[in-house]
Length: 380
Image (tube, rainbow, N blue to C red):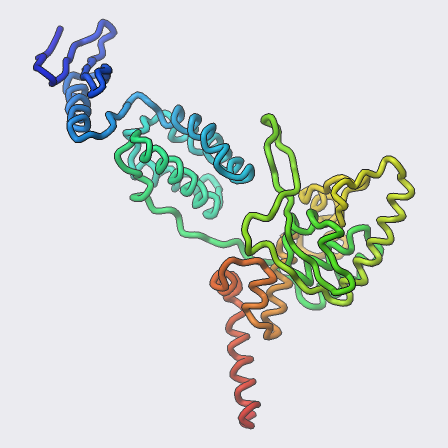
């Protein structure tokens, strides 16, 4: 059974499998087919294809599913972004986006479907930051599809990403900081705790530190590297790479107590290396390697050392190791240290980030400023 066939207008016929097929010829002479369950639907697809052809636009392939496109996109983008970024994209696509949206045609995906996907993800227990990050991944993928002419618009621009709900900080008090640092006096990783609580360095930055990055005479540490997850021949590995942004590469001053802790740590490390002999292989000259000189995986340290320390001291397990960084920044800001200085210590790209993250400290700072003004003018 056939439909009308006009010059340059395409051709519609019913296939033996019950579906309807429409054919048109592109400007380069290639044939393009569309398929649908009804004649009306296939006629609509053909008209859309002919219109795109007349306007010089790419004729869309309605058979390509989101799964097919995203799998191909991951292979392409793998060589355009950092390994850690590609890993995040891959996790988002394969663990969340494809299972829920993968069967939908790339060209038929709607903003409503994407919005519903975000809501389901939040309801399943994913954090707002994770869902927001997935939005970024999908937006990037569809923006590339738009450039390639596979879609006529990026519909993620019409879908609203969820409002960010930041995780509550569990900041230690000054007394808790003192107790914690006193308790690790003989710990193999005492230097880790001193750096986290007095420099606000990230754990990945601390475990990527090399001895050449520390100047104990001048009392400074130069943050250049970080521990990052990478994929080598499809397998996850950990490696030391340059920090992601220029703002993360920074110099931070060390307290006298931290310098002394690092000196003690260096002495212990020299004894360990001599005792192990050829077994010791610290190729990167790491400050905090594992027991045989290799790279210490931050998650392993947290599980084997940090969590046990919290339990020993009776500190809530909700205090993440990352909260030691927050503790340092909060205590400094509460004592009136300039926000710009703290922002540089944290490695933030914008002081506005610091102000937003530590907004809870600002009322105290403003009150301190009022008191300083009153004292200066003799009104106290």
